[in-house]
Structure formats: C-alpha cells, structure tokens
Image (cartoon, rainbow, N blue to C red; front, side, top):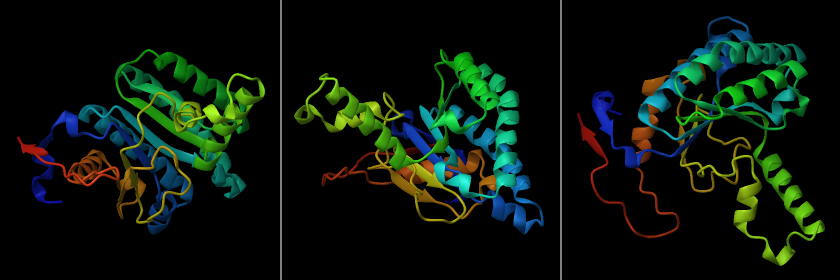
Length: 255
C-alpha cells in the first residue's frame, strides 16, 4: 500500500458490510519483548480499542472479533484464567465507552463454560447497548465455526421432530437463520494478523465468499490505519461470487 492510502476517502457503498478479524500474535509479540504472554494479551486490548473505533468511524456495519476459540481451553490453565480475568476487566472498562459511541455489543459462542460473574457482565453489557444503532460489535468467545453449524443443525432437527418442518423443506437459509449471526450480513472481509494463513475454524458458513486478508503484523501492533489498509485492499478486489462479470468504476477517491 502506498503512502497515499491514509489520504483516501472510501465511498460508503464500497465498504465491506461485515468484517471478521482473527486477532493473532499476542504471545509472540510479548516473547519478542521478553515478557509473559499475558502482557501481549493486555497490549492487544489497546489494538482492539483502536480497531473498533476505526471501524465505527469508517462506517462498517458489523465487526466480529475472534477473542477466544473453543480450542483455546487447551492452553495452560494459568493463561486461560488470566484471560478470563482480563475479559471481565475489559468489559467493566470499555462497555460504557462503546455505549457512548453508539456501538451495539454482543458476545457469541457457548457462554455456559464461563463463570457466572463473566456471564452476568456479558448480559449487562448486551442489555445496555441493545438499542444502539451504530457499529454492531460481535465478540466470538468460546466459539468455533463447526460448533456454530452443529448447533444450528440441532435446532433444525428439533423443528423436524416437533413437526414444525419437514426434512425436504429445509433450505440453506434455514441454516443461516439458526447460526449465531442470524439477521446479520455474511462476512465480506476476513482479516488475520501475525502472518498465519488459515481461518482456524472461524465463521466457516458465514465466510463462504469472504475475501481473506493476511498481514504479518502481530495483533498488538494493529490499529486504525492497519484496518484501513485492509479495507482498501478489499475494495480493489474483483468479487464475482462464481460469476464472470467484472467490477467497474472508481473505487477510491482521493480527498
């Protein structure tokens, strides 16, 4: 990306409606500085704040952040415990700021494994911001893409058992409507930091036609400018959705 990128104004109609972001590299960022992994996670909170603010300013409709996967429970017990404490602390500090900026906050995943204290804070944060009309901020916690599809299929199976639906009536839309992202647009742009080039079981159904953007930046170094570069890359992509027609017209206009 050239030096002019920060001076470009992005036409709102070209913005990705839904950005999914895999926040990776906290531990390696901390290791490079001779610090414990939790130091990287704490630094990652600052990156989260800058990225959310940047997405809201830009006019993105939905931002979904992969905070804690269902596989992350395999990490050392001390690290997981510290992450949970950090989650509680961040919720307490940041939710009022999000509310002030019109952000609608939501946590998606299997929350039953979290402590009652954390579950209560999540519920309070969602209740406080539920009527906000700005950026929708999803935090994926104890979440996995395969699990999300699995729980959607279970819901549909119960509908068939109850006679509400017949098996031959089930459509792809029924699956979409039973995912945790029901009523939200599918992912347009998926970003992963730290140089890893995989999506790690994140929003598998919703990201079927997402553009995948990988950056070598560790998550604590990611900021509003990093997000803008990813979005500018996105709008230069030719999105065909299986068709052969080409995009035309100006995508960026220099301010």
